[in-house]
Amino acid sequence: MKAESWVEKYRPQKLSDVAGNYSVIEELRKWAKLWEKGTPESNAIILYGKAGTGKTSSIHALAHEMGWEIMELNASDQRTKTIIEEIAGVGSKMGTTDGSRRLIILDEADNFYSREDKGGEVAVINVILNTLQPMILIANDFYKMKKGLRSSCRPIEFKPIMTSHIMGVLKTIAKSENITYDIGVIEKIADNADGDLRGAINDLQAVSSPHIKLEDVIVGERNNKNGIFIALNNIFRAQNIKESHNTIFNIDQSPEDLIHWVDENIHVEYTRPEDLDDAYYYIAKASTFLARVRRRGNYTMWKYAGFLMSAGVFASSRKRRTEKLRYNRPQLWYNLEKTRNMRKIRDSLSKKIGVRCHTSIGFARSSLLPFFRSTMKNVSYAEYIAVSLELSIEEIAFILEESIEAKIVQDTYNKAQLTLREGKEIIIESSDEINEKIEEEKSMSKYGKAQLNIEDAWG
Image 1 (cartoon, helix red, strand yellow):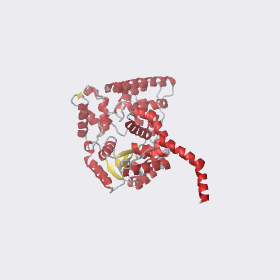
Image 2 (cartoon, rainbow, N blue to C red):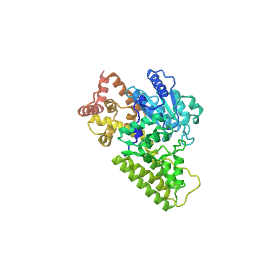
Image 3 (cartoon, one colour):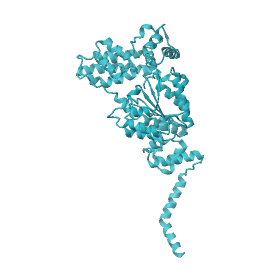
Image 4 (cartoon, helix red, strand yellow):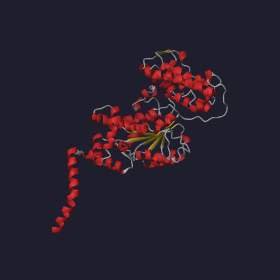
């Protein structure tokens, strides 16, 4: 299990808790309230600005505050025309079970790839023009997006967070985690963040201990333009061990995430068997320290993991390469993101079954879900189960192993919604009643038609 990130742990639940950009937050709130009234001034908005300025946190706080369901599509997903129409397009036209709004989120809207995401931007524009649900796009570079996509949304810019606001958040987290610190520690971390609150929180967690000394804060000036691919190049090809190690303090990645990037690209950078052997040895050691962090919650061990996955991996090479190489995104993340929505639906469904049957979610998922899946294949039971569990259309599609557009899914969902709205009670037949009906049908098929024909003949 991954150690909990403080960024996620202390993510604001209300818009009033978001640090900085207060006038922008108020714009976001007004836009949402107009959607609630059914009179939106724009179908979609683009939140843009540098990393760590609160764009994602504000969106999730908004959804939580408004009681909106979230459907998210990010850059780790393939975003072709077909996929966007199937996921975002369908989601933007379907209502939710409880009648609330569904917020469609498209992350990294400025990072469409011409080959992998062919036709994606045009599909997004079409979804925006025809959506019945609110949509928010997220981008770092507003002008990197195509003009058509920019003009279809209302732009809202998030400015870098003021140092004083970052300090306030860091002090609150330190107090909550029972951490004390020398004078100047919080100021140094906040100054280094360069307006990136998320990066500052990650830096605080990276050096966390019962008492943080000023010399523990080994951070240089954060360069937000230096992305993960530049950082990987610096880790593998630095001038010395110290420079390689210092790279991890200048990027917005926790050791839990960075290890996947390094592990995925060791074989890209190193080809000699002895280099690979040593590099994977240090990665394995770093993984051991991260496992201890997860088990014990002792984040001081992050520094050892960080040193091994940077300086250790750097020292594994006997000969530096100079040619330009293309680094890869972690395949593990891609596989997890690819099935994220399906796993979310499965877990939601298992929770409903578990509550209904008074069992654990794990038992419902492993033992009861297959039974419900088999039972719902019978159309006469499908509506009863959909009503009893108050299933969404996505959950019905999942349990029936069909697409959302399938007739059986649509019919089951529509009948269930009608029953729920009208407050009808569905009475399901007992096994004895079903067996009796079967026998009657058999008898009818054997004698009924002949009897009817004789009666007709005699008038």
